Image (tube, rainbow, N blue to C red; front, side, top):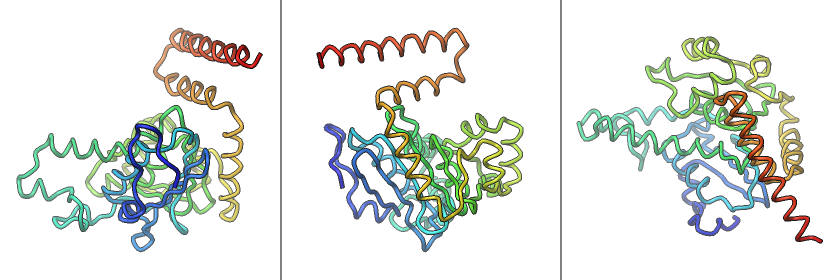
Amino acid sequence: MAQAANGAGEPPTEDELSRAGLRLRVDGHVARITISRPERRNAMTGRTWTTLAHIGQTLPEDVRIVVIAGEGDIFSAGIDLNMFTPEGVEGERSLVAGVLDGSADADDIEGHIAELQAGFLWLRRPDIVSVAAVRGHAIGAGFQLALSCDIRILAEDAKFTMKEPALGLVPDLTGTKPLVDIVGVNRAVEICLTARRVEAAEARELGLAELVVPVEELEGAVDDVVAALLATNPEAAAATKALLQQAAGNTLEEQARAERRAQVDRLTSLAKAMGAGA
């Protein structure tokens, strides 16, 4: 495993990754994260998400692309439902035990959820491009993890389902905003409150997938996108992603001003590089 960036702390150990149901491989500018709990259909737990946050905090500085996939023929069945039992998952905090025994109040629970959300939020950082490579089912938290990524490449057998409302819950792992941003409020309501499957072809039509390919071509398609992303100047890529992320919340005048400021920075950097090379 590559060394962590200076000052970023130590990356998770192989044992920590294994207990979280994750694998991590860093190869130069590309980090590949695999959800690996095949015995639970790649269902995730709180430890999965806090370890994802740890990965994000300790990535080497030169990593530019993060690819997330699931082991085998499924991306993720979502949250491990044992998290909602009083016993929880071995070695982890149950999501309901503190309510049942009175040891956790609303602030405690909200703080814990914030810790779990951190595993999803870092994938939006401007200095990286995150890619979800989705095979089979991406249910609930799995769907939200894919929504956290900048680019979603789906195999033809991929299926998205937002299961939380059917379980008496709400989607709380940062998935509601990107879903509404992509498909609009009305379609998002329909997808969430019916908990129906959105298959790959429809996902592409709705804008939930940038690319849909045959199952056997998924790995190659991801590699092609990664290569194209790496061919772009990293500083320009980060500045452009930051601009695009703020565009929806800006007026045209505000966005034009943001573009000007970003371009001044880029022109200044280019000029300095030219001067240094003279």
